[in-house]
Length: 83
Image (cartoon, rainbow, N blue to C red; front, side, top):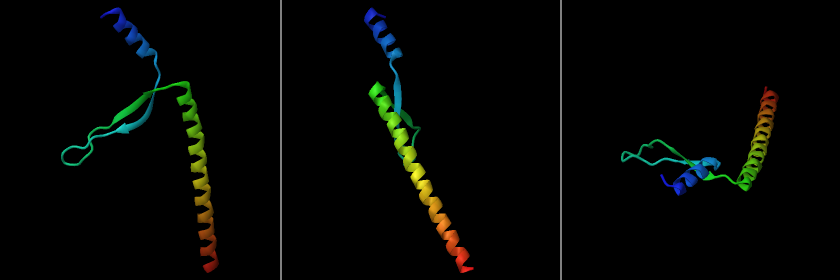
């Protein structure tokens, strides 16, 4: 192993990666083969975007849950009125 190889290897070991997806090929019969995670080298900007996305998706899920609860309450009220 050359000194350049050692430097590259040690630099890669220090890099931080984050998973951004998965990929799976299909077998000839159409079934999925084992999936493989996809990674990118994480920069501070990527980490900040990830945190923003987590907040955004959390708000989206909370809004959907509130919408679901309102609809269930409305349907329950309607059923009680019919009785």
